[in-house]
Amino acid sequence: EDEGRKESVENYTGVGISVSFNSKHDDQQRIQQLSGGQKSLCALALVFAIQQCDPAPFYLFDEIDANLDAQYRTAVANHLRDISSSSNNASSSKDGDGEAGDGGAQFICTTFRPEMLRVAQKCYGVRYAKKSSNVVVVTREEALEFVEGEKQ
Image 1 (cartoon, rainbow, N blue to C red):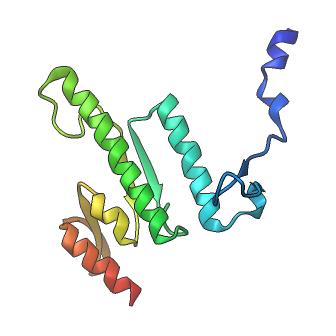
Image 2 (cartoon, one colour):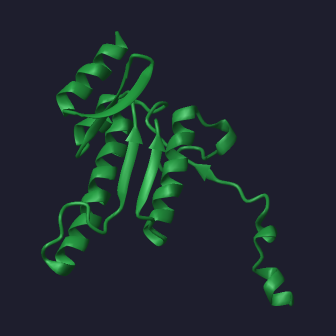
Image 3 (cartoon, rainbow, N blue to C red):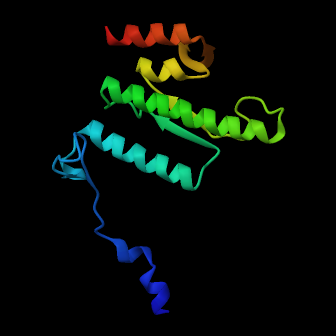
């Protein structure tokens, strides 16, 4: 019984995370001291770490890039592309005739930023007409035009 108690999750309350974003010599900061973008990157790092250990078939991300600077949006988008491609390639090589997306993790992301759209395999738009919303497939160019128009 004591052994089970030692491994219980309740014994880990108060565990903290300290991070450094500038260099190895930078002062580490607690999560409460971070900006919104830095907190987003920490949360994504945790999700990606869990994904490596215990992958799910798909992930639904709602505007995960909203608080990120352009360089981090690009890095996150490229990372999603890379891990999606590697999981797809691994599944395709098993049976030799798998289509893209068979067996690998899918990342479904909502965004109003261009970086994520540039690496997306498929883009969808939500159109509102006659008091009704419809989801339609759009080209990457149409999606980018819409997003670029939102900035103005």
